[in-house]
Image (cartoon, rainbow over all chains, first blue to last red; front, side):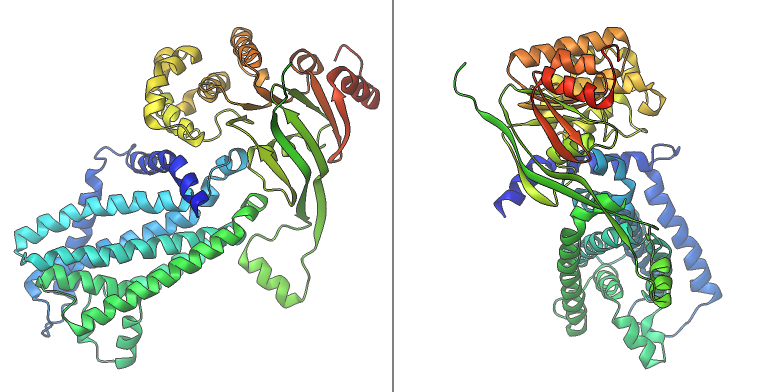
Length: 270
Length: 253
């Protein structure tokens, strides 16, 4: 254990540099740069609100007021795209750094870890747009609003878990990239980004969606942001929090073990 | 000479590669093969077999051998890139691996940004690199090019920058793989001068080059590898003459 901490301390500067590199290079060639992190979710929010708020509108009552439907969509989209881009880039992180892995020794977990962190930092920046739209539309801001940090932390754990696991698998099986795209699409439709689960009539589908830990994270986040109420005092929300947190940490343990067991073989396969 | 201190101990190191006949690197092929009942065959290949030697502080070891004898693999094991299949390696002190200069450079980054990136790959802190920044810039002779993305550099410029960063701290162990053959004559001279300075301070060197003359000039000890096995270990002249005998090349090569 002491050995790991020592090596981490030695390479913490590299971790910082890799995170910085990811953020810098992502927007280097675009004119608007980091503004895109704010603009892009805003524009998708407008499109999705137009489509699912009017064209395919469902006017039954839910616990979320329909005036805040843009916020509802924005929350779902921001959290989902954080997970999808972190897991995708994390998955490719070992392979895209193969030139480096072949030539110098660096603890290999730094690659998935840094990719997840830089995506996460971009995600945190994009929350600014949520705050702006939220204030304009008048979301209730209470002491409970700070609880929004909890589902965001769970999301971070889940991103790292998926990056560790997928980056390992991707070294041995390249076509997992295409498979993961399909799985991500499934996860997206099961995350209730632009519809209300409460409105669904099919109990089985409802049950399946509630098994999706990403949906639980998004629901927790929405509950705090849109209603300004505590997720700890509401039994259903607390159950979702417990479930998604347990899922994420177990996934993290599996991801780390799989990665650690196989990392010495990476160099023979990339 | 006082008591000799061990700088590096390579103990019975072997490395096995599995070279599969047809590389199966995706799920689709694996499933098809499984369904067809085919076995994936591997060709075992020992890149290094039972290699042992000990280097004392200040030794300058030249590693000789034909292409594919395992020279670069040996250096990579010592640098920690490969993990030995069996055997152990004990290192004492900071290693500067110059296996390929600028491994870890990002082509989209400018020279300045790459100093910090590559420097942190080598384990230096940001504050330290900032304090040495001018020294690196001066030695690399890049001048205004330092703010240009590295993808626009010539290979010589990249090598100059890589060398300048890697040698900013005097390491205890220096690993050199053909790196002295890059850059123009003027820079090469400067590199050799810097290297000589390090030798005088008693740095331990592992050196791979196909230029026998260079090996002869820089090293005091040699090992000869053949098909991954160590077949000779001794003073550099003896190993060189054995190498020449084996390969049939004469002095002019």
